[in-house]
Image (tube, rainbow, N blue to C red):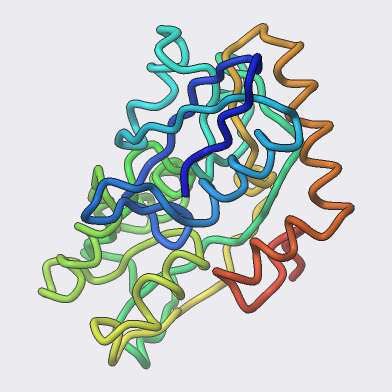
Length: 243
């Protein structure tokens, strides 16, 4: 389904990361689908914006916004103080905790981390949190450009665990054949220092566009559009995350 092309509308360049299903993926025909693209389409339609959606790896998205290659990123991007220094964020549009994926039955305590290899997505909050909390316990934090590559290394036993957003782990790994014998283990990671929700990132200083996006978000939340999109991809409510 193409993004809405509205006559005489403002053209907005949007970027997402397609290696992060069910939030976003790219089909063999090149089409970009998933929760984030559907939210982008709904926001564009509501705000009467003509939006052009492209894909790139997550770690290149903020630099691309800074270089003015794109106007907006909707890529399951966690709102953090450091990111907020270089991009403007919309209101939170979903929030899920972090979890560890490992062999079913793995018992996690502080001693377990010593010598373990744990995969994280480059530039995700789990990279920052892993380095701050898990590395001091003796874990080695392995960084991946695509979370799907971390899943492959977990299945091949090159990783002991993957640390990621729980919804991605559930929908794109545990619910698939490759997730057989694996489970979420250990604590739920929901420290508000790292989990302030995900926002739509807008090129720094574009207050007019940010306002349009926030108004549109409020409308699709109020009229049921958001809930309908959410229901296509998730069985649980991800707005807002609740313990």
